[in-house]
Image (cartoon, rainbow, N blue to C red; front, side, top):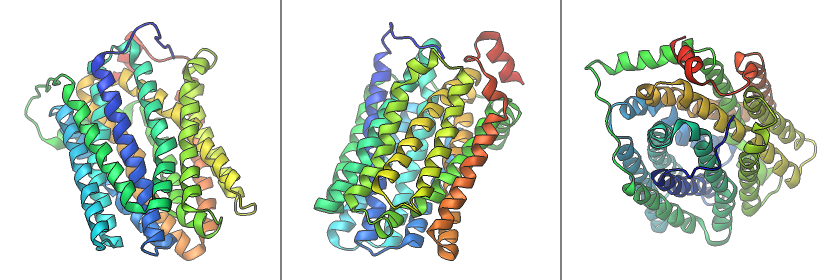
Length: 417
């Protein structure tokens, strides 16, 4: 995967980078604060935190496709600004309920759902706007920097959120998350207005069918889609019960829970920083396969905590969950941008995002039901089996054989396949 270190990325991209940084920190602080507030303030158990996780991820399943259709028909900049303002509104409402002593689990779940609506729209629009701002030769570098930003948020955000909840209460975490979300929206106001593609009048269902056919018939994008579905289902089976499991079984404090979640971000930083080094030594397909491999290794390490409860073993598991999948995100996003026509990027990104996050409510439901009937240990076993399946999907696909990023005629041929 070629990188270009000698050319600076455009100023508009740097503004998007700042917005991405603020948005990701806001999201991670809020995501760490919500289950901790539920467990420590509202007395929630594993099944209840599972339902909370499902509510916070349900918009990814329900709204990713409509968001993708909107991205291909409207201003991507305007959608990103509006999305962050919506998330800021949900965080403000949560904060006011906390201060008023009126917060309960249903309200926490409902406001988490509303905030996730903004996250969905922002997440679909961001990858689609990048190719219009960044030259094709610099896409890999741009995606790497965005993922470094996200990695920093994953590393520090949960730890900061956990520490704030543990030391000062949930209110401080939500104040910081709200301010960061508003800064994310403000950072985008300086980028040029993106042109809206003129489209022939046809129904959204026709647009959706076109995007689905493109992904479903593409020899590289289809296995990526299937891998993402299984990976994220398995990830949320685990995460649906992790906070309660860590506090009640592993005996971790709120601060330690935040640290273990933040270690995932450290792994992401390590993975993103290693991209230039690895791209000179490994094939493009091998780098993609490292993501599913990292997920499987992380699941195996977490499974070991059933027999050897350990804060450090949990940290090692989350480090593995970070370092491999970040390589997956960078390489597969670059591949998607390279082989997908610009006018279809919103719909294709939405389909991939639906797989990436839309499978999460399903995973949360599976984790909740399995935990309630068979216990947390069964959840960890189910998650590990899922991570094995997603690794096998990508290893047996044509993606594994890619030597480099498809370019020129090869990319055009793949887009027509």
